[in-house]
Amino acid sequence: MVNVLTTFSRITILAYIIIFTVIDMIQIFEYRLNETVSSILSTIQTVMIVLFLCNSSIVLYFSKDDPRIIGLLIFQLMFFVGFGLLINTITIPVSRALMNNIMLLLCFSFVFLERLNMDRAIRQFVFAVVSLGVCALAVFILRKIPGINRFMMVFAVLGVLSLMLVSLLGKVEYGAKLSLTFGSISIQPSEFVKLSYLFFIAGCIVTWKDFRGFLIAGIGAAVHVLVLVFSRDLGTALIFLATYVFLIFIAYKNYLVLLIEILVASIGGIFAYSYFPHIRTRFIAWTDPLSVVDDKGYQISQSLFAIGTGGWLGSGLNKGMPNKIPVVVKDFIFAAISEEMGTIVAICLILIYMCTCIMIFNVAFNCTYSFYMLVVSGFGIIFTVQTILNIGGVIKFIPSTGVTLPLISYGGSSLLSMMLGIFICQCSEDLWTMPEKHSRRARY
Image (cartoon, rainbow, N blue to C red; front, top):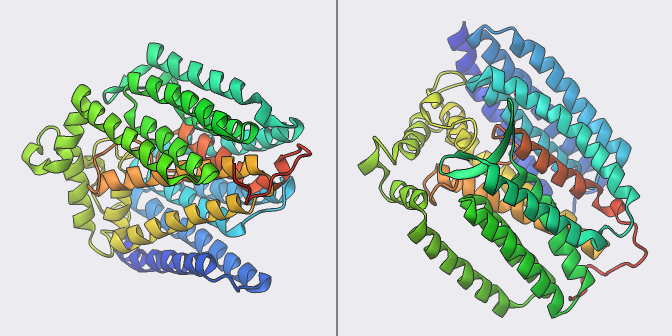
């Protein structure tokens, strides 16, 4: 019975994801869709999300014989209803397609955390519910603060102090100081600093539209990155650096500055390789993992074995061995998805991430106000770079950096940070209350 259900579900789940992905691609690349057609397509996507979540949960329930899965499914469906109602209540949605993508990614998170570790799945769901409430509160507060770009230095100081606190008191995990622990609760301040960092950079550019904005933002970015390097959190440091580089390019459109910044970043990479042993370890594991499979290359080797074992259609939910991969619920959850749902679903997931990134940038470049255009663009850069770093590390395209897969990997800090960014994207057009409007085409 369970084997038949699992085998049948391999095909049905594949169909749901393919249909969702095809509609995503149509909505991204077909600009002549009228509102009625777009609404119908979005509704079909919503149906695919519900079918995917219900089908996956039923398979896990019968294969694991855990009644908590059905209870969690009911609460998850209620959560998504509340998610949609909240967005429609607090603002006119900028992109229904974007929200469908976010909900599907959260479904992947819920399903695979239930598959890998039920206790963590429950905690992640609680994190999601809390994040939803915090996001609503954050949007309310942002609406009450006129001209928030004026507080850019406050954001910079708070961000740097938070990172310094981690570098001094943080818990060392996998060679880097990443989090602060309070009893059973662990918080990663760098996840929240990503957003304060965006407000700082965007504020500098909008306030000083000349070289001063570039210089002050550059000094602030350098301080953030150096503190992260001191903490050996080089994956996050790379995200911060890339965000500054591309935001400056979006604002000033100067190719020479872009090339200089990329050159400086490359020199920084050489420095990191020379002075940080755990970076050299990851580089060795990347270049030839099988030669050190019993030590440095074990994680990436197990990831590649899992992806290869799954094949095109996957082994089926709860039929693989993803728990052999170290830190699978965080850094390497994409390998677990590839093994049990197959390469086709993995490719579709990459395309869904790509469409999500494009949708975020579409929202950004349609913002009326330059400050939020830059903030949303910066979030799009963070989302894109973090996705590339995670999936690239899992498939051995680049060395592993230890960053999480947005909205899917386990972790409350990462989830809250990403959901806050998404809510800011959705509400960006009605958050800004400063009288002065800046054309989105304006050069800084």
